Length: 173
Image (cartoon, rainbow, N blue to C red; front, side, top):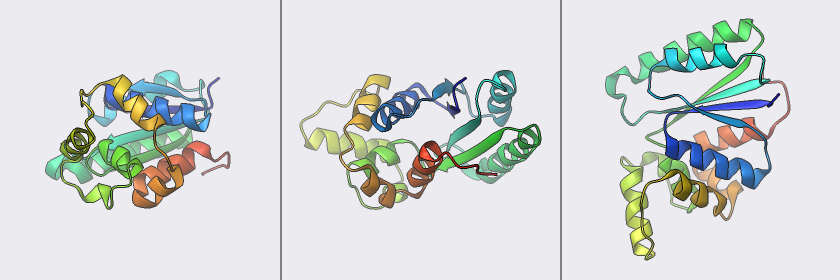
């Protein structure tokens, strides 16, 4: 049984989480949600219940617009239902997208306040003479290359929350 399940929205998110967990030597299973509806995450959680001790659902907010609050409420309500069944579930909202976590790893100040972190990441990579082709492998590589994870945690609250949940064995209930 894997102790941690991480549910993400996109394949590049999978790459980043795989890179971080490899770097931290944390065993987890990363699962693709395939869409933004909370029902998809809850179906995955119910289907895989018993195969893990806790779950983390990562939710990007970059495309949600005015429905952002309603979506988070739906996820939170579902989490409460699943917790009653013995599952420790954590929902982490990422302000804009996972690229803000990569920017935090590159020591960019206030990465969660950048309106288009993907464009900023492209720009920074171009300045370094590196090619940006968005892919699972590139994001995995970028995660493994974060020089100072503690510094990145200071720059991004949601990244800090994720790392704390991922690396702490304590009961979070």
